[in-house]
Length: 69
Image (cartoon, rainbow, N blue to C red; front, side, top):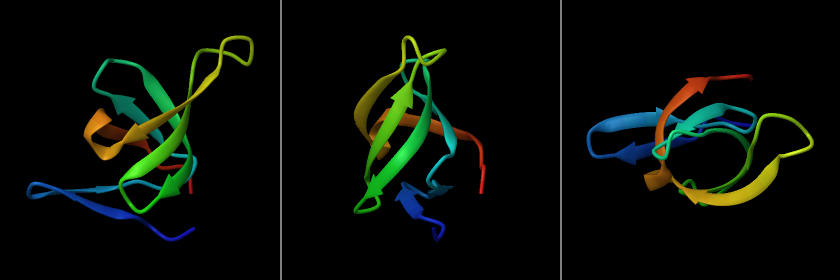
């Protein structure tokens, strides 16, 4: 998958599928899917027993923690 450049003010966040991001509410999320460079499907939770798949937008993301690809 190609890098996704999302412009948030003057800061460019590169968010790719399978990246781990820090959400503004303090949770970490794994990006599962990206739509229109602004909306994402992400998994949150500590283990398969409590994973939850959620929809988030670029405004919910504080920063990218690591790029997996």
